[in-house]
Length: 285
Image 1 (cartoon, rainbow, N blue to C red):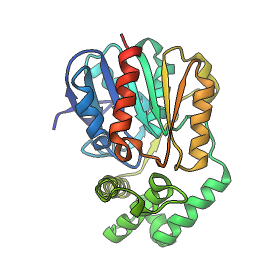
Image 2 (cartoon, rainbow, N blue to C red):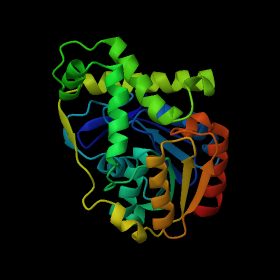
Image 3 (spheres, rainbow, N blue to C red):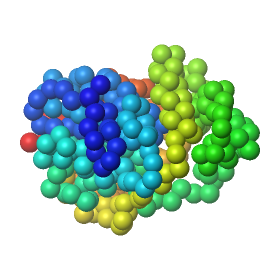
């Protein structure tokens, strides 16, 4: 497993293929394994890079203050990639947009899948729904210790319950059950998400810094081709962000996937790969 020291932390990554560069940034509930299908397929025509955010997967621990989008930009530097198409899912999409605004000369195209957006405030109703599910999964006193990084012991049952609650909220989405997903897909999601909370709750205290200024009011500045992929079974609040991106980025193309939640790269791997292949074939130099 190769890694590079980036902004004071070792970031694990995979690098394959040759041609125009494509860099994948995963969702917050996953790690770089989110891109298994797309990484292998696109390596036939592109140089493809996928990496684990700090504190995720096989990368070093999150500690102190940091910005994920700054790590992404620094990773491009460390790998000698002058320009790349950025593909991001969930907050990985938000960080990709932040890089496109911070260093527009480095980005050739954006593919944003069930994406977040820096500067966007989630409505109170979404927070209330999340709290209800989370508190039903993990007792409030232990959850507070985990979030404050003061727990002396992390119960594996709490990790499993939190992972399943978070995935039910988004990856499954309202109106569906985990049994509606392919069993192998669900298990793959759960494995990645358990590792997220194992690492997050056992990490030292840390602070993620947001892009400044945030992207929400600056989407009109993006001048590269953009593909916005939205899952129609995802939370409506997240789908609203897909609408903001598709409407705000000049010339962006939006694709809605039926019966698909918050992690299309693993729930609909072949379809997402096809969309990316077609988009990148015509939109990257």
